[in-house]
Amino acid sequence: MRAKKSYTLASLLLLGVAAYGQNRERSRIDVQSYLIEAQIDPAAQTINATALVRFTPLEDMSSVAFELNNSLSLSKVLDEDGRQVPASRTQADMMVRLNLAQTLPKGKPAALTFIYDGKITGSEESPVFGIKFAAIHPDFAYFMYPGRWFPVNDYTTDRFSSDMKITVPSGFKVVSSDSGSNETAPAGMAAYRFQYKQASFPGSFAVVRGEPKIISAGGVTTRFYARQSADMAQAYGDEIAKAMAFFTDAYGLPYKKDLTVVETEDGTPNGYAAPGILFFSPHGLGKAVNTDLVANEVSRQWWGAMVSPTTRNHEWIENGLARYAEFLYAEHVNGPGARTQEVRDSYIAALTVEQPPLIQSGRLEDYSPEFWAATAGKGAAVL
Image (cartoon, rainbow, N blue to C red; front, side, top):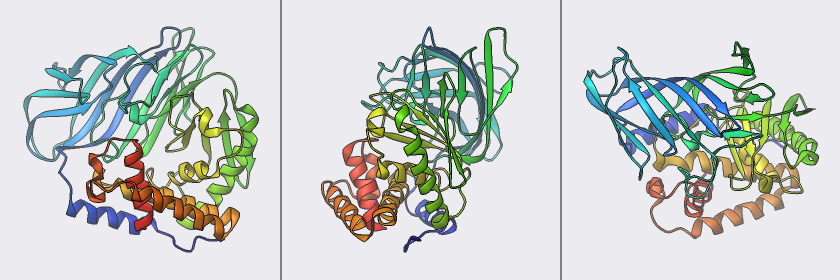
């Protein structure tokens, strides 16, 4: 069944433009791209990284700030002339504030290089309270964009491209938003390069061992890296293929239809979607296919990867559309009655949050029940 209420990417982009004009505190910079080289040591549970950030000032400026995971030690920041830039950090907001040697003129492209390292075990305080988005273990590792493992500007609203080279010990491999390529590496090491050229939210990857379970169905190929849930790989691969076909029919082609799925660990979100790659926790996968989870995360190959709000106060656009996608898919799979129940549940969740107003939902704590009730529940109700 084709979705009765569908949205074209063009219409949502126009909605984003309208939102921009209505209620946006203008960011001081617009990040275009990241060039990141990182080395992961699973035995020591450490990362050493260099990130070159290319950006354009939106006004004349002599200082700039980025978010960076508090567990990472910043060795130094260099400007384009190789001069060290004075930096100060505040733990409360994870901010790195930089005082530039000279004023950057509005509209002139600039770049800064961050050199940093740290130990990420998953037990540290997360940038998102109570939820793990980055961890290195002796046998696997994962780094998701919300973990702020690289310097982030305007979280979830400033879209960027990325070029990442990740080096790991031999016997490990790295998976990310595209198929990647093998790069030259020192003896006993393996290096993988991932180039994501579209402006989106790449920058998430996993370090794994072994080969994936490959599921091909309906013209969609899913590579599933399981840890505890290998017996669920086939069923999830089949469902992901069905969801991808359904949403492609409703919304058009995504950037990438073949997805990589990585099973994470307890304490991570049930699901997280980056372009071309999905992260599922053991709890999220469960013992039977969670079709709502599949629908929500697969739909984010459109809502988030291709279309996103310009301010945190408009996250209801992205999260509401992903929740609404659950309604459409439930009806497609199980009939109109399933959609009616999904809508009722969403309305009930939406009613649990009276304040702040939906247009001020950026004030809510990221990933909190109140945030989801407002941005997903109310967002879907509006749509």
